[in-house]
Amino acid sequence: MQTNKSYYEVIRKESFANNDVYDTFLNWISGEFDLYLQDEENDLQVFFPFGKFCIRRINNCKENIKVEINVKSKNLSLCNYISDKITAVQSHMKKI
Image 1 (tube, rainbow, N blue to C red):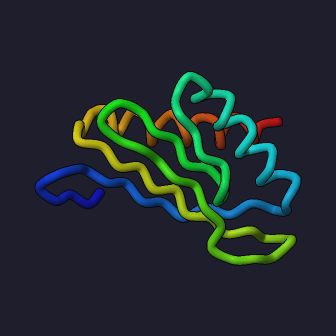
Image 2: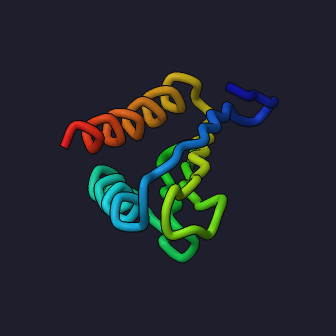
């Protein structure tokens, strides 16, 4: 976890087997946070009170897709909660 005077930040790098799995993940995350303002222009960016998170591709491959998940919030517990929620969705996908 990184921090500066204005916000807390959690950055994780993840990988997905292919585009279909990655697109499913983005769809599920978008649905999980559907009450918040979302920008899907460059992968997915979701704005929530006192922060935002961004999920973006690092590489441009069709398989073994690398992504960066970046959660920023002015509130530490909210930052951890959002990060944990994203992790829970990803863990649930792996079980299916």
